[in-house]
Amino acid sequence: MISVTGLSKRYGTYLAVDDVSFNIEKGEIIGFLGPNGAGKSTIMNILTGYLSMTKGSVSIDGYDIVDYPEKAKKKIGYLPELPPLYTDMKVREYLNFIYDLKGVKFPKKPHIDEVLRLVKIDNVQNRLIKNLSKGYRQRVGFGAALVGNPDVLVLDEPTVGLDPKQIIEIRNLITKLGKNHTIILSSHILSEIQTVCDRIIIINRGKLIADDNKQDLIAKISKDRSLVAQIIGDENKVIEEISKIEGVLNVYSNGKVDGGAFEIVIEPMKGADVRTKVFNKTVGLGASMLSFKDNSMSLEQVFLRLTEATDSEVEAMLSNIKEKTGDSEEGEEE
Amino acid sequence: MRAVFKREFKAYFTTPIGYIVLCAFYAYLGLMFWTTYGAGVPDITGIISGTSVINFFFIPILTMRLMCEDRRQKVDQALLTAPVKLISIVLGKFLAAFAVFAMAYAPTVIFELVFASKVSVNVMTYIYSLIGVLLLGATLISIGMFISCLTESTAVAAILAIVVNIVFMLMSMFSDAVKDNKWFGWLSKVFDKLDFITASENFNYSIFRFADIIYFVSITAVFVFLSVRSLEKRRWS
Picture 1 (cartoon, rainbow over the protein chains, first blue to last red):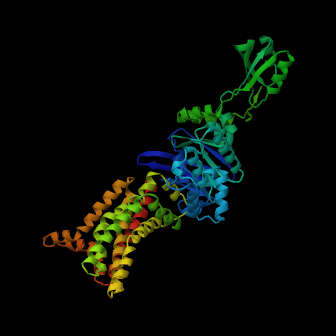
Picture 2: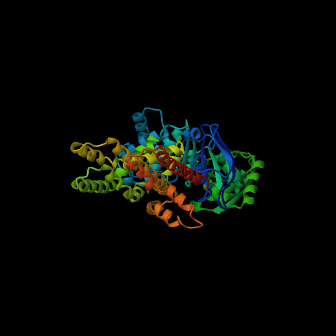
Picture 3: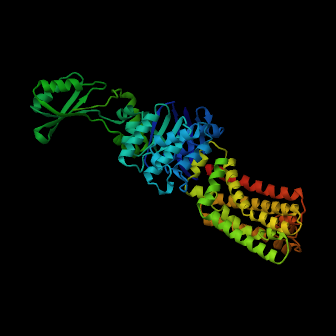
């Protein structure tokens, strides 16, 4: 659906985007991650034809954005970082304007009504945009992107400025739209990407440093996938018995924790899932397990680790992955 | 193009700009009519050609926010990522400004009717001078619009356009000044060609020449084209 090849963008001497390539299939929801100034917005602006690239090519559904800009742009709905709104217009008036501008063919009134309903702004449709709060403006911008029902949605931080309830609504909407749209979403809120997206692209200093599905990415970067358990019972016996379980490489104690329990760390062998066995064994010994969780990194940690690392460190981390075949399932059990 | 035109035309009247410009213009026209009528001279072309100089200052106010306001508010992102050609965005804006400008001359129809009720008038004279002033206006609008493309500040756009217009206004003076100069005498011909006022005045004498029409249309086309290029260039910089 979207194919980006060797994309570079230079502002004077500053290289904002450096040789980025990726492909996005129809129906995927892609999360774009990166610290401020990483080049996310620049890439999105190039994808949507607002900026042009210094090098490389972008094609949307087979149409090159430079050679066939109108055809390519017709497929895209774009919500930029700051929603582009004429603040002297009313909400409905503005969406009508976007409808006319895009030359949409659907019947006008029902289509605009549907968009207003989808982003939940039908109650402010006759208010001036300049009098709306940031959250509402954001949703008007989202609505404008949905006008014409384009196949691809490019959303640059769509939930910024919304309250927690609205954030959940918008996330649900994105998930819902994801069923029949291709979506590129950028966000600083990692949990958002984690809940909404299937695949994550991490950009740092203009370079693409990771492009993988969510679980694999976490699995790849987590150096030591270990399990941590808090147990009440005979510490030595438990450690001894658990270390005998097939698939367990090493067990060591972290010492006492609150409530008279002790904490142990279990390192499984590559590819082995020992969680059920460990749990059953513990209970079998008459000990109680208070908590039991996967110690793999959260996306937040992965993100920090990747974006704070130097280029060579990143390369080492990612190549480390290929040898690591461990299952990508991450779970939390209690 | 229609969407942009509709939006821009309406914007003139959701902000005070359209009202202020039109009110001031109508007041001036009314004053001119009053003095002309009072003097017993049924001369509509005098009233219309009297507005030429005013236009050099009024039109920059109409054009100042055409392009730069979008850019300042980042609304250009909506326009430039929509599946439309740049030329239709530019033309939509140009035509909106031109429509407001043309509205400024609506009262002259009433004036002409008043004159016609008293004496016999030559309608073609009126139409010629109207065409002349509208062509001059279109040219000044295209220049103002191009200048508005170059900056992000409406004030800068207005002032710059007024300065440029004053330079064009003084062309005949420049021409006279260098006419007898040994080395730069040839420049006077160039200045003469850029003298908008003289070119538009031909219409007031009911001299209808295609050359004059093509003159204004081509200058307008050049600045519309330059506006498109400047939007295009922004993408590449």
